[in-house]
Image 1 (cartoon, rainbow, N blue to C red):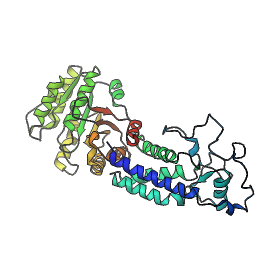
Image 2: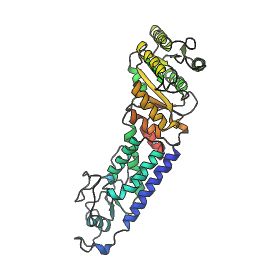
Image 3: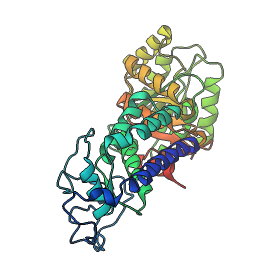
Image 4: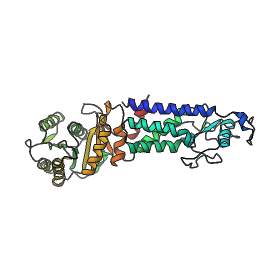
Length: 387
């Protein structure tokens, strides 16, 4: 999973590492005669107060792989070398400042010029991984902001600081919108009505079946509504799933009025104190005027508490574009991405929540009814950087 994206990010880390290696040998101590500190001054925690990583302090870790934590070695330095000061991303460091850090403190400093070429390559790699342009730019900007002004000891694990910056950038993009559907359904007034939309063949009906089993396993009663009266066999497909799971299905004849089917399901749920109604709808593009009007009628006749968009993770940027278009036409509340286990790039999952401003709720991870994973940004980032 995400193998192509992993390879792209590894390439970026290596390029930054090569840049650091170049900087580490680029200054000759003989060129520092004009500096105020003699070359022979020994390096220690006491005579290198500006260092962000103290050699003799066992309480300071050199790296921290928790993307939500603060990596001390990533803290920028001000003109006097003090940790924690904000540095503009276009900050340029003078020769004397770089030479002092390199020769006397055995540290290098990354500035904007050092990162220009690697960050361009990173943006291209993200785009090639089906990550939307605006999302790629947000990730690159975050990485730039974190790395410009970074001081790092020569010989330390330079790849770790780059990986931490990437992890944090991707995590921040993906965690901008997080929503716990289980908690919402548990606390909401019953019945909770959830309508599923998307194009044909992306796994709406299977996702409904998976969620129905999830809610049932959680002790809730569920009824499914066969609102896809347009596609031949759609009603039978949902009926087979409902039979296997053991939940009630409300259905009419093919080519019937979807709004009427879903309205009947809501009335059944109210009469029988059912907790959750899951409504299937016909696959459609946002440009299909007739079907979009039909969907709007469903929302008027049987207003949903949540309207969820379903698409395939492997569709990449197409899924991102469709999510944005559906959100513009009939505002969605969140997304479910299917076939995530087969996704080599990860672009759709990284992009959709950021582009639509609505959360990803679940990831389809296989064909079984239990193969539905609640979306967790931290887990997702960990998968991208897993060995």
